[in-house]
Length: 525
Image (cartoon, rainbow, N blue to C red; front, side, top):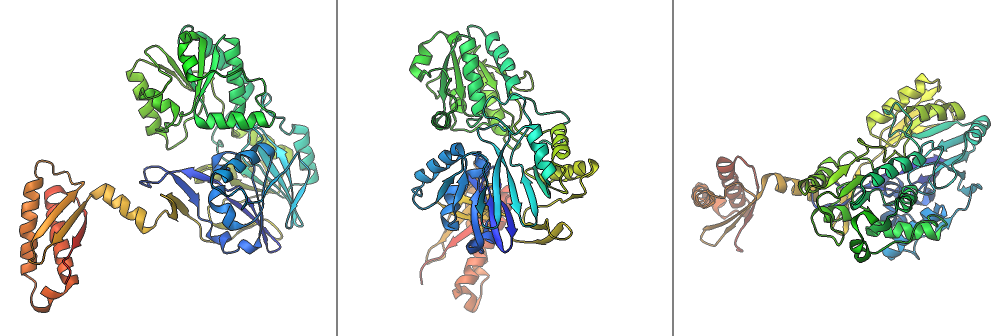
């Protein structure tokens, strides 16, 4: 959920406005955002939002915050079209100014003069940013890699990057994701060979390839593989349909073979169709999960093959494993990037980082985009390669780049927000905290009538066989607790409530080992 802020002469520039997907730590929540309180309190000082590329962790929060921030969005054509569709779906197309930037000419946003620097990544129109300020130039990489055969687009060359370095780079703000990878990430062009060999190997079998929908270069590669192996191409997943449409509207995937629909694909001999599907990260509603669950028009049988042409994102292991286990139980063959060269990362390994340092020769390195261990390691790597200053920062840190000595100045409020239903709330707020407790411990509701008799409903307690005995004993404990109240306490609702709550919770703990939430309903006076 990338959100970067640059401040200069009292004005602010935002680079990217992303989100992430929720895990088990936020029950009932799908989307997680960065807390923008700092810049929301200074929205009148924000001049614009520049988007580096169209991955969800860089643009996914736009429909939820851009209208309130009230500043223009800047994007290249492919990214801009995907953003426009998001705004349209949210009914905000007329409320947010979207400025499409063609090419690499400079454009001004407040005191910042910005130009896009095309870099290879696992999506069309991946870009870094050159940000010129009165105090020096910042090279913000966005997500990137080096690729001699990028398939889609023309990344900035080594010579062009050296020219940028010759002109002077004050600070390099750089992707850290693959800093522990000791080798280069590899070329998209090389993936063609691996995918061609794998698809050709499974002659006479239906083959499904799952990959990231946004990887336009991989979709081009799979189209070429389908053509070369004599297979018809079918895509399964709404996000794939959308990406292909937007890509073709912007001049990409023009040579993609004609697509066949599900009915046609199912009517073809098994060895004459290649299906591209969403769901490689185990998403339960995606096409691959539905195929694994035998709930999709594309049917797989024993001996069919699924190729995972994508990396496993940390945190998705359980979901991916669930889908893979379902496929394995049905005798479906699976091949991952650990078994065959069918995927390359879109982020730079150590040799690529070292090359960029050599070409740009920055005075300051600010690692971003990764966990703390990735950013700390890149800071060490930069120092070992002669970069004079490295700054290890965490979310909420304000860092001075210039003028004066670079380093951390202050910390401001940061954190996470979640989309809970239709409402954006703090990730550590009462609703989420209580939901975690309910999921972990269960809940018991006690209703007292006017005579002090209790009706008890326990939810989520492991007492299937002992439940009736638990209820009976708890009623006795409640009666005993009420009997111990004397004088005015017997008529004090708060005293009655607490006596019943404690008696119930103690009984639940005694019977189950759980400490459930207890709610007491008292009769009206």
